[in-house]
Each structure stands twice: as structure tokens, then as C-alpha cells.
Length: 287
Image (cartoon, rainbow, N blue to C red; front, side):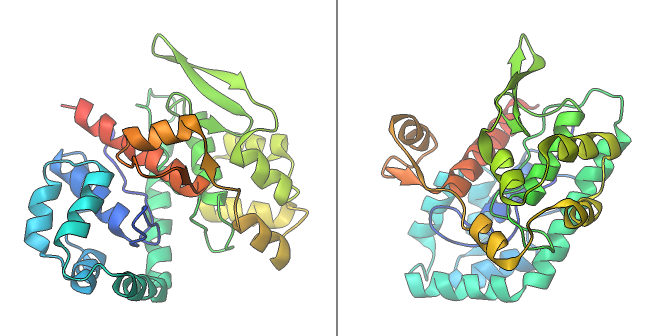
């Protein structure tokens, strides 16, 4: 049974806009279920920073998180119980997280290294489906959003462990009777947008990831050598992301995940909420 590396960056925010809260929640619920990877645990420096900034009674929140709430329920608890939850307090907290970017980046790179090492150690063995968890909104040292998620999905897919309906490159994974297969989706999805925006070749990129199984720094070096467009304007336009998602199906999904008042949602956040919902359901199904 694979334990969870809480690979949600401290920089990532949920609908309430509070940086680090998603990572704090995931770490706590995985720990509560006995499914947190070795070396991780609740109550770290960033947890204390968040509790101090928003005047959250840490013991009370920790007790609540042991019930393995949804992320929407965790946000609702914070909105109800935090001593400081106004926009200015949240903005000040987020600025402190931003100021700690070197530490956040080190943590992200360590998470990605742990995932890479785990997959490398299990080559040829059956691996339980792994929710990618790395946000579309997260960038590595090159500053290119979506690239870390592109990388981790490709490695998980190559290991035969990408969950049902998740997409890597131009293929979507579809399970039939518990066996993963693929559905071709040429030109669709954010991976396709990423290679198009950076003028990479999809076949060459996926081929490199599957063949060489690089670490994340090695992948960024490969992208630097092979991308046709990496100028600042191109990267900024790419990082701005797609238009928000809306419509009957997204609204239904947002309602199911605990956000009935949201009629539209940024693509990055919508994808994050789906990941968090899926990993919680996975934790609950485990013994």
C-alpha cells in the first residue's frame, strides 16, 4: 500500500485563497489515516505560521482534521474559527508564504524527488493508482507552471498507476474492470497546451520521460535544451493559464465537492479540487 507524499506546494491556495492550507489539510488527513509517507508530519513550521497569521487554535484544528474532513469542510472550519479571516489578514499571510519561496521550492523539490525515487524503486512492480497532486499552478526553478505536473503525470503513467480519467500527454487513462487502458485525445488538455506554448514536440517529450524517467531537475534541463520558446513573454503568457471553467458539469462537480455557490472556477483550482477529492476518497477506502 503506497503512502502519500503530500505533494501540494505550500504556495497553493484553495477557494478561500489561503496559501499552505491545502498542504496542511492533506498532510493531516493522510497522517490521521496512517497513510502519510515517512519523514512527513503535521505541525511543521508552515503550519505554525498559518495558525499564527490567522489566529487559529492549533490544537482544535488538529483535532478536527483527524476526522478526515473534505477540503471544503476544512476551509469552512477555518472561516468559522479563525480569529483573523479578513482579506487583509489572508493577504498578509500569503505574502509571508511568498517571502519564504526558497524554502517552499526546496520542499517542492524534495517532494518530487521522493516521488521519483519511489517510482524508480517499484519498476516492474504493480503500483496502486497515484493521484498526481502536483498543482498546475506550481512551477519549478524555471518558473514554468504546469511543467512539474506534466512531468509527474508522465512518470506515474509510465508506471501504470495514473488513476481513471486522468490524462498524460495526449492520452486519457480509462479503466475497464480495474485494468487501465488509454483513450487518444490529440490536441486536448493542458499537457497539449504546454508543449504548444513552449514549442516542444509532444512525442519527443513523452518519449524522453518514459524512456529516461528523469528527475525533475533533469527534465527542466531537457526542456531548456529542446523548447523552441522560453522567452519571458512566452512563459508569462503560458503561466496566465486558460479561461475559467463553467457550465452545468463543472458546477455539478463543484457542488459535489462542497462548493455549491461557485458558478465558475479557474482551471488550475478546479483541477486541484478534483485531485484533493480523489486522494481523500482513496484514503477513506484504505484500511
